[in-house]
Image 1 (tube, rainbow, N blue to C red):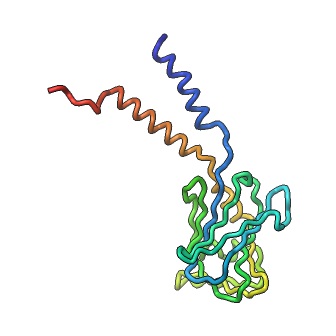
Image 2: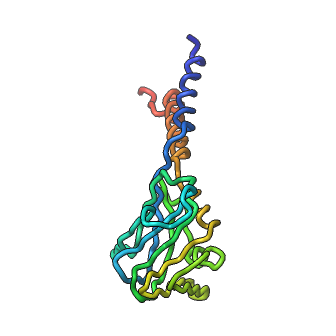
Image 3: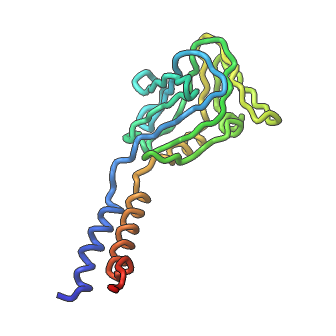
Length: 197
């Protein structure tokens, strides 16, 4: 059999491995604080099949005071269906200072937000017992919260940006194939072998 004919099934297998649809990886929304108090935050989300925030669609995040972070994990099944996000701070009167917001999927940070941009007026569609104070000169964003159910709802446009961060690992799979192909090509050229003395 012609050696070139052997490449066809290999290319078919590679294409199937790279492009065959797979479930999206979970999404991790991570808030990093400079200052915060309380035990945990909560994130409510809406999907296109349900237009209301409810306890059925809620994830909680314990505040880790070693890293000053709270992580919300959204299941990969929500990918492409996310339509609303509401973030609830601890039910305490406080002024929290947010340092950064990152969105990760498949173990890779897909997007990092400056809190001054994330909490800009254009990205917030509603608040309850919470005031957002962006101080550009200090590069800080303050969340002044009351103890009675403080939360904020982010805009549809920002929700779309977050939803787009879900990863199906296609780029990673393609990179693996390119790496293996490169290794095979180089090994056939025997560049790793040394000439006998």
